[in-house]
Length: 348
Image 1: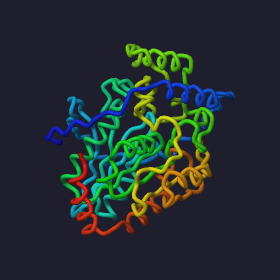
Image 2: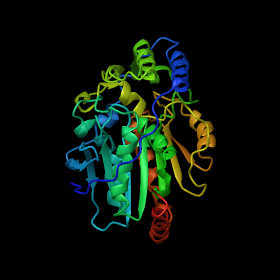
Image 3: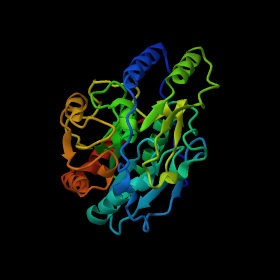
Image 4: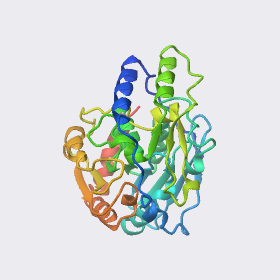
């Protein structure tokens, strides 16, 4: 358990008319066609992972007192690197077990798999624990601020909406003390070239309620922000009890990058970025990632895993092979320590 209470980070701005209009346009296109059925095999490989040696959850006290849960994969002799992994929509830290165990065992890197606020072991009210749209960004920043005091090199990874949260956090100033990024089938925002309608059947959106709450917010009325606007189809999930069935309006806006933005990310050109997508992804068009990251981070290493869908990409041997090989080629620890030390003075 972490004992030091972290610094309080500034939250992004509230929603405005421009964001409302862009959400309205994007959700109309997103829901224009009939909703497809999520394949019943979508979660089978992920659910088959043996969790007998899953680390017990630990907690980190956030600045507002919320207990953020994480699972720590410790190494006997660490190399000064910590890998922090953020799950996707409705997900939980246990989804990373196969990958996290492999990284800790064979790379000598400590791994922290997070249960974001409102999910997994962090959930007080599943999917409804966020009261400000910038809260998850602030939570992630606070956790990373604690780790940067212990590790000279941090690698940040995110799956699906967790990748979207990484994009949002990068845009709000996290990059100076992150050494490298990993994106696994990331959600790039409504309107991006990767999104299938309804995310392939994974989500149902109450578009009328979503627009009504947006309008209320524009007039300063936030009392409806806790209303459920998104439901997830867990019918194909054998261990559905581990997942979060729905999201509030606040959670929807907090857990992602807002609307697709093709502007380059504020990542230095030489910083390693890995993107892995499954060729059989149910939620996204995998071929769209080459186009998207040509804009976002032109030097990103974009890989495609064969015979993988949106969720089993996290346990596929090919994905694990990509990650292990990529981590082997990160800058050495001494250089990373020098870079991180100099950057600490520039981060507020």
